[in-house]
Image 1 (tube, rainbow, N blue to C red):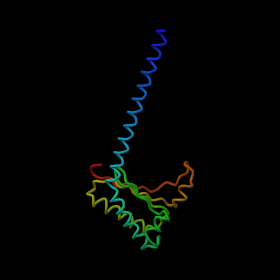
Image 2 (cartoon, helix red, strand yellow; image 1 turned 60 degrees about the horizontal axis):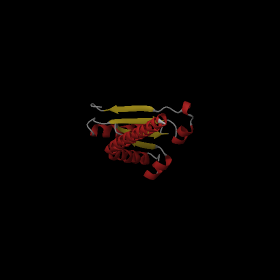
Image 3 (cartoon, rainbow, N blue to C red; image 1 turned 45 degrees about the vertical axis):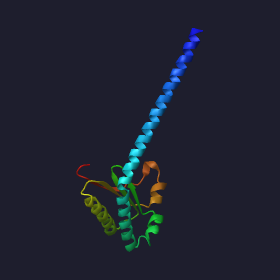
Image 4 (cartoon, rainbow, N blue to C red; image 1 turned 90 degrees about the horizontal axis):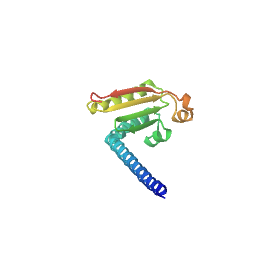
Length: 151
């Protein structure tokens, strides 16, 4: 009888500890996701401003007919993270146009007194081609990293 009571108490203790572990994990998950989300908002406006300027260039150069067309054609993407901004271009192979787009990125980098990290990725293929490629044979972008002095 004593053995059975000890077993029941041990099971209750294990269950309460397991619940504590789950709660700690849940709190850690909530805390880290909120921290990243706050970091995202820090650079959101700048990423959107970069995209607006890039869209103007792509419309002017005939890649897109308007901003919505640039989005639909999936020729550029922006990501904003706690560390900075990532800009991806797809299927643009004109050196002149890529140079103009890079100039937009460098302008915003120095506009922030080089206190931001900005990554510019140039994929030589379309977004659809990149997505359709198997994981072991994904097209590699040309990466240009502008890393701030305090980063």
